[in-house]
Amino acid sequence: MVLALTWTGGAWAQALTGLARIDAEASVVRDTHGGAELALVLSQPVPYRVFTLDAPPRLVLDFSEVDWTGLSPEAFDRAEAVSAVAVGTIRPGWSRMVLELAEPLAVREVSMATDTDAVVTLALQTVAAEVFAAASGAPDSALFRLPRPVVDLTAPRRRPTGDRPVVVALDPGHGGIDPGAERDGVAEADLMLGFASELREVLIRAGFEVVLTRDADVFVPLEMRQSLARAGGADVFLSLHADALAEGRASGATIYTLAQTASDIASEKLAERHDRADLLAGVDLSDQDDVVAGVLMDLARLETAPRSDRLADALVDGLKRNIGRLHKRPRLEAAFSVLKAADIPSVLIELGFLSSERDLANLVSPEWRAKAALGIRDALLAWAAEDAAEAALLRQ
Image (cartoon, rainbow, N blue to C red; front, side, top):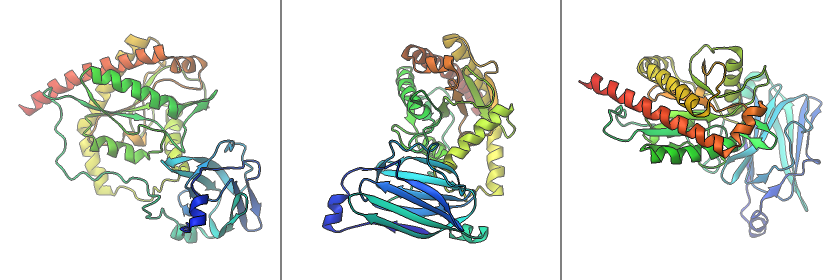
């Protein structure tokens, strides 16, 4: 079920021109008999939309738009009915709040009361799981819909043989409603966006062509990132991250390739958190690849997987030569969804961990990042030359 409110009158149009701000202290979610109630106090009325998603059950509220400053999801007065809260930008001009529900709760009533401010109130009631699932789903709205994965009906891009520039897709992790890891005022999403811009300039000067999966602080779903790379004609895909680990201690750069079984527990948990970030951003994951598509993708990976492995090895060597110390196990594997493209060699680079003081100091250092960029450049140059030579032999 989708509930949306908009206004078209002149008086309302004038009221909607500014950015609404959240009153964090006055906003609350609380348990009620047979459900829960959410009250959001905003500085002014704005258009909004409410819907639910299943697997896991979530309540999604979109606004045009809200400044969430001062509202900490951790400090938000949660009810037992709410397991987690995420807020942030979902796309330019639109803000999102996502509540992960501890049980299926249907929207029984929604309203906005306006005076000097605006109060959005939602009454939720417990329903059967099958009832919730039947009423859930992302609406097909031109105002709010996220970009869909690109359907490319052209012939597969020819593997480079050295006769044209290699196209590198840089994927700055997280963004928008999903800031990634955070520590001491540093957000992973911002840090990786800045590094991607720096790395892009280094690679262009080395003769590569570069496409970015995002060039601003916006949310891009995991499946969309590979689609954007493919639409840009990418020959190789690098996902850039600087996570934080709650389990144990880790430091130093790490290169990940795709595998169904993770190298260790920490890698498994890391991949799970990446997928969970999409869920908490309100992505509808109900559409899954069918069995036939999965088989065809596995066949395509028979060629790309060894190329990804060689790329990862080259990155370990290039980074080690330029920044020195890496993670004690710099080559790891995990089931990262962002690496699942069957037709593009793909790796995920953890430049470091914000949970490590040493890594944090490196990551905020322009000098260290410059060395890391040169290491990645050297790795790509070496890998591209070897890959092109192999491709030329295969075509003979």
